[in-house]
Length: 322
Image 1 (cartoon, rainbow, N blue to C red):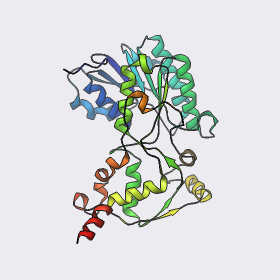
Image 2: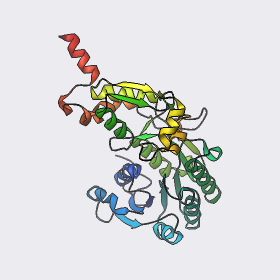
Image 3: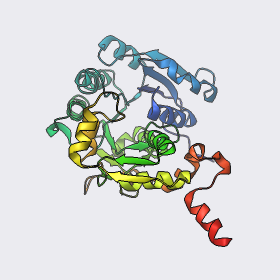
Image 4: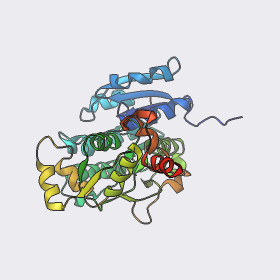
């Protein structure tokens, strides 16, 4: 007999639950029998979750972290909460810094059993990038207001419905020659379902994970150049990749309409990997999965003949057999 989750029947407020990671966290919470409240500026974006919930198990409320009254309303009656809110544009400090602190303070005042705050691996307060500064401020405010909160810092999160692998997949599909920015930057990509599992595990067991910070990265580190090469191979395409020097990369990122902003470039350049000695998946009892387990499947739609096409490895194997 399966032991019921400690979250079964509990009301969990998922701030930012209409986003990419939120969708996957929501599914795991519903599977565990939690009553779920999606709090978002655009909660209708999460309406696709409705068929996965039992009657009365799922609720949607509009919420903006910069409006204290809406945060309080979203927390009313909840016993657990997760903060997934992240933005690259607008007043990032108000949302991810001050807003995160407001949420944590109200959560503490409401007597919540557990709070999980999702931040990001990065240079932190010392960075010149407002996004990184805001994330660092958010962590500081959360720790001060809710000392037993769990803070999770994932590396770059990927999934079948992400805006990262799919962006590169689309560019590689269309162009025979592509520039690679920060080609030597090391990444420790982490699959979204493993991050979602970490969030729910921390939420289930605040007695074990409360008050701690975990950095979440996949089981391998790869360079930006290798990532592009592997995506092309999964599509069954031969592509020429040109390593771009930092000077040209910075100029490109500063231009309007490019797929990478100057702030995103500044965050990418030093890499994005788990710090040595940091708590991670192992301490959460989770074994993270590698990119290679998913890439061929997710690049199917970018192949010349879709699922009837071949990846480079399979094409080579067939040619050798002939």
